[in-house]
Length: 141
Image (cartoon, rainbow, N blue to C red; front, side, top):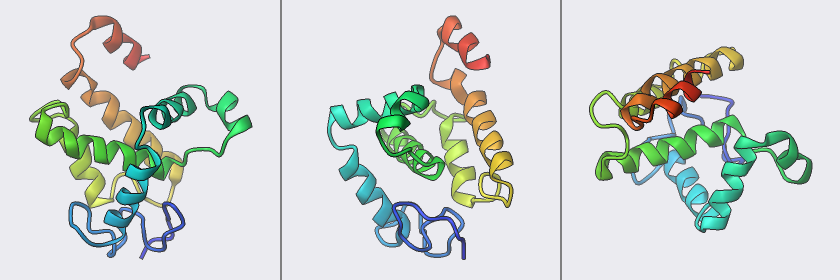
């Protein structure tokens, strides 16, 4: 089992046998329910985005959003994107979600390497959802 936890739920990391991503039971389902409730309103989601874009200012006033929570939030968005087409289609973010569900590349013993792998993979898929040259160049920087 993993030592990673989301929302203080034991065995709630992606590599936990109890996680069961995509199923109606397991710690993944429990964490998804908490996440959906926490970010149910537009204001809640705006505060989340602000915390990610301006972490130093935000963290001085609020609790930091954990990297594991960010992975869960993106996983839920990409899962939904499979249905509404916002995941970039074939070869889009669904591939990153699939890699995340296997919990090998993004949950190894070195947290920094795991984060770098995750950021590199989501950056590489950005072109599947944005065709704006300016946004694509900004993502490369």
